[in-house]
Image 1 (cartoon, rainbow, N blue to C red):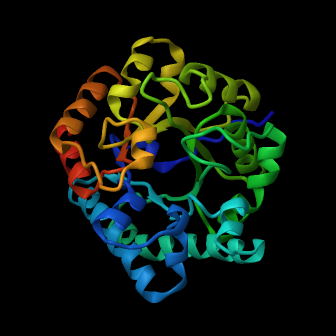
Image 2: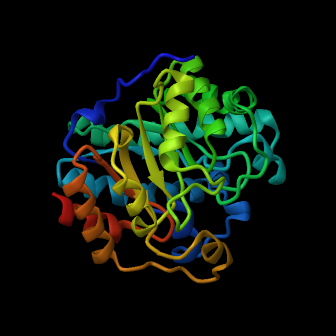
Image 3: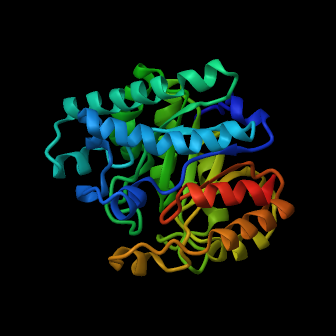
Length: 312
């Protein structure tokens, strides 16, 4: 069991923003080739680092102009052993990449923090397998061991928190939450769902959140939903219950397409930013405690700006 850690400065603010869909923006809007959909190799050269800074700066400026906090992610969703091996990276090289990612984020946020903005640096942990399919399923103990090196690299480099993103079954999320606690970092767990509102593993959002909380003594600071359109999880939230109070943020897809359709897509579906923003506003009207707002696949700075206009 792991005691809870919730000391995150952006939780004391009215709304905190995140970025949109990093990888889809880079691939479809910037024309950058990302083998295995991995953005972390961009950290290895000046041009790549400049591209990442330019991407995140758009969102930082949206937040700063509106007096909001911003959760600044590292581009490390794929920077774990299995995906790293596919891309030719050793464990030592991955540890260096993860530390570099935090250092890059710390440098980027510095002028904003100097002007009084709240910008926690968030070490992003992705699934061992595919985010849309629960392959390579692990026990919580196996998951904690598997992800611990990446989490430790984030801690050593000075990250403020860790987020497990696009989790599709609860056991891996339990392991990451405990790995974060072992490293002394607050954690956030973000689950993805299919069009029926249930996770790819078939588990409901309620069951997944309750499993993680039961197994970790409520260790995560909060939970999120990402990589799904609001129409996919509306029915799950409509169930009601105390478990919904544990959902602190949403990073929705722009498109209402299924994961299967998105996986096969050769063109970006940006959806309708205004419609997405209206859905966020409706969600906030019902669940005012959901304060961390951002985007996932297909969203860019236009979607985040529209969400701000609708929700503030």
